[in-house]
Image 1 (cartoon, rainbow, N blue to C red):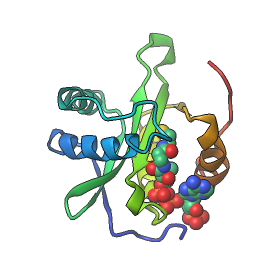
Image 2 (image 1 turned 180 degrees about the vertical axis):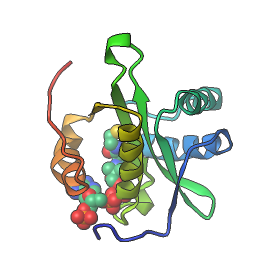
Image 3 (image 1 turned 135 degrees about the horizontal axis):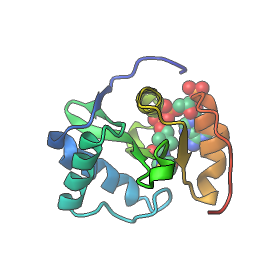
Length: 152
Ligand SMILES: CC(C)(COP(=O)(O)OP(=O)(O)OC[C@H]1O[C@@H](n2cnc3c(N)ncnc32)[C@H](O)[C@@H]1OP(=O)(O)O)[C@@H](O)C(=O)NCCC(=O)NCCS
């Protein structure tokens, strides 16, 4: 499926899309397999997160199908002054829409924006149970060239 266009539209996040982003996050969190939280934060925190990403030009894209957010990818710049070229990536695609190239489109958009914004290193934290699928599967197939690290 490499590079094949999907039915989803991948667009930069905006405040108007914060609630939809939160719903998608909540759906993936409820699977209890991939994310560190078991549900999305309260809507106020999601709005604050999106607002900060927009204000700080952190790459944050969502995938839309019929105006419903069904996936996201964000890269949050590290706040420590000596780590300003590092970002942490978070992403997910709602289960029923996986395997259709949407994750690829999201990460491609986010990494391109990160490169344009002078990020030199993007970090992804995954559970050990998800590491092989993410590193040797998704990241490898999408050309994200991961360098595995453990701990800290
Ligand atoms: C990881 C995730 C975002 C991938 O999204 P997706 O839309 O299913 O991925 P795509 O369909 O774009 O797949 C892109 C490529 O990666 C491969 N791939 C995707 N998921 C894979 C997996 N679990 N194992 C192995 N390969 C995988 C696909 O086969 C595809 O390769 P191809 O184009 O050469 O055939 C999605 O599986 C997900 O939401 N997982 C749960 C959340 C998560 O783990 N987030 C990361 C931690 S923050």
